Image 1 (tube, rainbow, N blue to C red):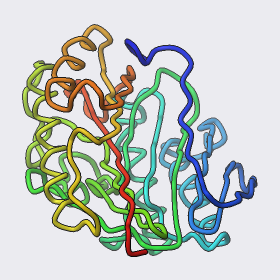
Image 2 (cartoon, rainbow, N blue to C red):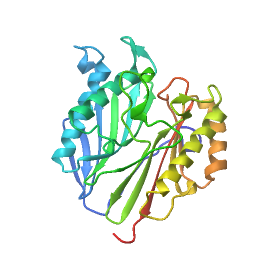
Image 3 (cartoon, rainbow, N blue to C red):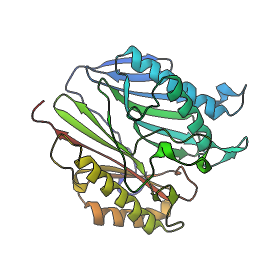
Image 4 (cartoon, one colour):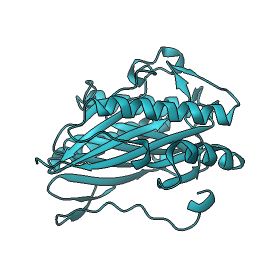
Length: 289
């Protein structure tokens, strides 16, 4: 983590209901009457017998996740956070992020979850080392996908970005009794499907925040609550180069405000020419539920 967010920091999700803890097929999870949150770590070394170990690991991890969600009667995946080592490195003739996308896509196909409206909000970030780690949140009601008019839907990317398109929605609403959650996926400086402002951290940060604003506008046309504002978002900014942190922070604070909670993390982004990625979430109370 970078700047003021550096040091010990925990992300805690609270429930007003009693929770049950469990472990299944390597997934550690907690579940209440409406929501399941889990984490799985998968070592690629367990898949060395065939081609593209990361592809196999990703497919296996997601198939395990979907099996758990079905058993726990929380079949709808709302949000996924994917972390993998060396995300931009080419191995076995294919960039590792593209290997991951094949495995994730195949798991969605096998489980019958590829249809539009069934894919979650998500992000995929690179780490220096470690297992494939997937944290996820799911529920008993389907998410409402939200797309960005400034970007091509990820699952419609042309083949130049890999054999399989990334499997996620740009944002999504999830609904609980009396509550609406807004998840904005990891968002970067891509207009249409092309990277913009290559080598320009300030330009990429501004473009990314323009996408967040566009997603909020789309979300406000679908919300069951009052409109969402930039100033009420909780954000996480992933920055490729630590030395770019001051520039990113200054632009974020100028556009979102200094009171909004923002965590800055050093991480690799899913394309080698992307320097920053920002995700966000917010929650509103629903008075009629």
